[in-house]
Length: 266
Image 1 (tube, rainbow, N blue to C red):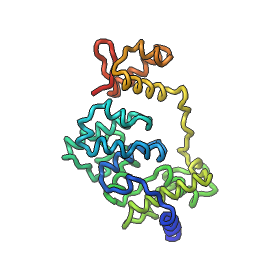
Image 2 (cartoon, one colour):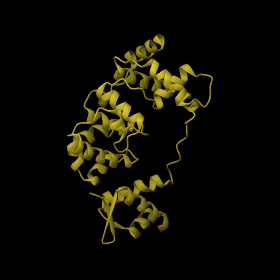
Image 3 (cartoon, rainbow, N blue to C red):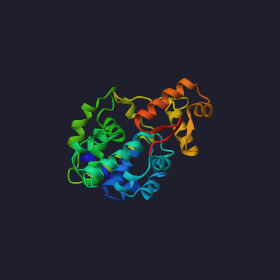
Image 4 (cartoon, one colour):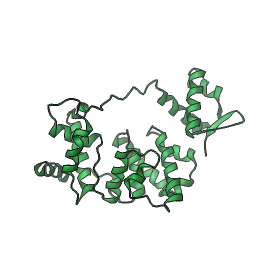
């Protein structure tokens, strides 16, 4: 395990990435980056992160911002539920925690859009807490080194190794190093992550409900308000499909209806 750590750190010292969210220990900025990085490539996040932080520099500014303004800043990242979850989180943190992100992983997991892996990542990167977690690049590294000839590797097999390898004195730096090694493996054509029992190919975006949802929100951001019929016509989609997706968006808190017109919730 000591040789493993040394190899990971040697690579990091030579090739570690300088990313804007790694240049701060501000818990808010790190939370924003972790939510943005869920299911989204680093390159896309780099194009949006600093602008978002400039527009909403802290929990209080994000909490009071209108949803349409937040979504405008979020455009291009996809998975718009994350933007809504961030706004809800900012409101909760402002109202219940005095504007300071809680340090407890259990409390972090209660915030909107926060699973265990994200909560632990925030705890490690914002507070340098020695917590064990697995995400895609970490999983890639451990499967590559410790399960080279196995298929359908489960996270419960990997977790004891993550715990054993953890640099408890420098967890923040250790996880940065692990993730960068995982990125290097993928860039080099390694496919260790596909040996995970949880690996699933992402469903095609073209023609998906997710694409239609994004187009609806973009149209409403551009036009301000539109009727259901106008949206269906602009989207060139069946009215029944548009109606179903609009119902989901309204239920989730994205939309409001007034006088037969739909617009982004405030």
